[in-house]
Length: 255
Ligand SMILES: [Zn+2]
Image (tube, rainbow, N blue to C red; front, side, top):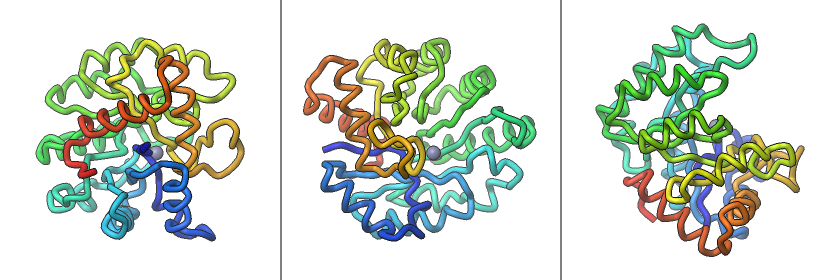
């Protein structure tokens, strides 16, 4: 059985087949468990509702840096973080890519507040970082008692090395399968397999051969296939290792 460790099921609500269809197709493809993060604070109640409705879906709760102008305490409570279906705090982090971003100091403030929340709740974090590697590593080093995962990891070996030393996990998305992603495959070939998990980040980043389509958790099989090739191990063995890794990353998960 595979686990999609990062899938935005809250964005599937309005699709034709809805969440039911997405979860059914995932099951048929051998993807038995899905972890649904939040990015938009308005989606937090929906994510919790989905995780309560489906016994194979869990949530992580956090506010993405693109919503950095909000106050985390208005949306995330200790009660939410202690919910049995909430495994961690995420996705949180920094995004300095492009012009249409929130001011860096606003992003850092939100990021640090959510790291404090994770520390208080004793939960791991799911980190989003884009064009902000140095600040991300520096801030995470201030919270050295917090572990977690670098979600949809596409940064270079520099950050990988730093975060390996910090004990973090690394999540590979469908980008791993892209033709032009040789450097990312090279980075993952050097990351020890006990520190790797896989995700779709759906509805984004559909892997080969589904590029251009709306991504969904069933497609995590393609990322797993490429990862098994990179690590030169049978697909079944890779699935077993990924499962054990998720249990270590998110100790609250019950599967
Ligand atoms: Zn995401």
